[in-house]
Image (tube, rainbow over all chains, first blue to last red; front, side):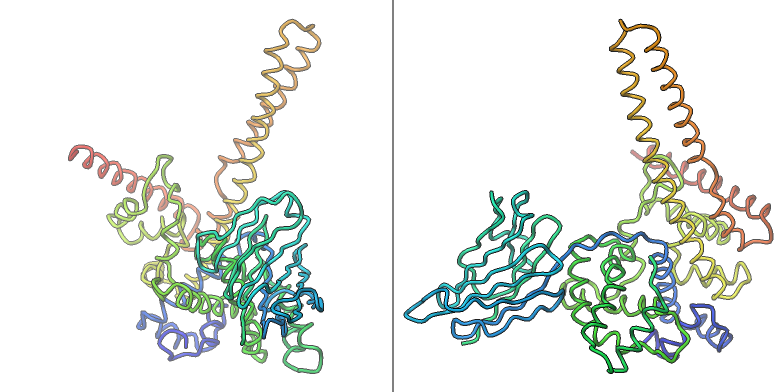
Length: 185
Length: 290
């Protein structure tokens, strides 16, 4: 709903674009209705600012949701960005069971993210990127300002150990990778 | 920032028809609008890069359903509709992610970070400026707001302007929009010139140091250095004059509110002088009170 709802959003947006359709009726209404007037003024300001403003480059990012089931990765869903998931079979053995690890190669970012289950509900997260050797890698819980890890790796790889299920963000250079580890028992 | 209206509408049409691979079309659409989405909180509400990134992800997750709602049968530009959508999405985003924040996004949300160095060279806070402006009569106050801070005009100001300048609200809104665009372009022009002046100043400092340090060298080298300095000084002075030149584009848009350019100039000059006197009086009163 736009403003008080007397006019549809489309009608008022057309008015903002200069349409003469229902002009007198809308003008009369705007003079009487502070809610619609406020909305239309605000939208006018936003439109002008967006038109004249300069774009800043996008901070490249990826958003990966990883589902693990019974110590095995069931599937990986990239919610934003595109990438390829590679399940490497039988690479580790825990409690007598052979388990898989998942590697997520991200198209938009020169990196891949490897998630290795080490115990029940505990993972190692390996981040590989040629950009890492000249940068600091920071791991945070999503929404938290406190870093869990802050590492300046010497090579193109960094390992975050003891990671439990939850939403995390890795920052390095201008990149952000958000990953969400979900465990279904 | 530009959005390719025709291209986006064609993509939406293909997306809605369901005949092709919607993931590919959605990816193409994402590429068309991603910068616009990412920059929306920063430009429209002066928010930082963290919020921009968060908001970008938030919208991207919903892009599919957002795009489906675009009314293809209406004669409306995609960006006008998209601005309204993004504003609603930003309100929802704040509600969803930061429950302590107020729900409604408006001018007040933008004003917190606004620069107020438009009237005077010395620092002036927005509160003092607004107090000074409120002491002026309606036409003078509106004139100054339209000319210097068109993005700060609220709903009441637009309504009053419509009455005072005897124009429709639609016309007043169009003038406000043109003024915001013209002022932004002017700011960008000044920034570019100022960057160039900075580079000339650096070159001049280097050349002058070279001249000073090489006092023992022959006259020919010194002469060449002096000529270079003179050329750079002249270029810098030309840029300074260009930067200080009156802003014609903003004035042209602004004069649409008045009968002619002469009346516009007179109105603006009087209003500016009155505001300066009010601000000086306020400052003097504060100093005396202290």
